Image 1 (spheres, rainbow, N blue to C red):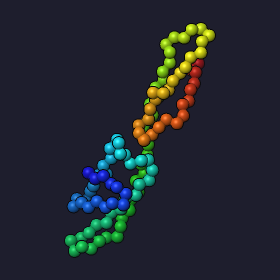
Image 2 (image 1 turned 120 degrees about the horizontal axis):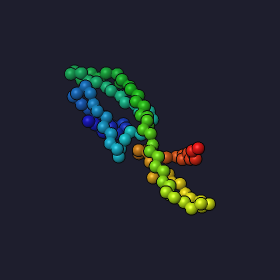
Image 3 (image 1 turned 30 degrees about the horizontal axis):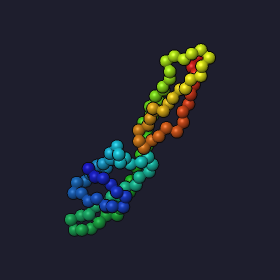
Image 4 (image 1 turned 180 degrees about the vertical axis):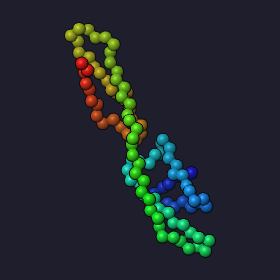
Length: 101
């Protein structure tokens, strides 16, 4: 497991490495480039190999609709989506309201 910091190399003896992310430090959505250079037992370095990983936000937000249980005839009332949420670093940007038939 490794926490990658842009521009800082990580050396391993193993041929694989896990890119470690946490809920508080995720890779943000977008393109992320990684490079690998291998070194043989004579100290010779390979040409760099590059890979691009695209992090996508494919988690649906959660809508929470709060409304009064009853209202008096002829009275206005408020609907609230304030408790709706998206997993960080996502955020709610639009609330679409519909009165169903």
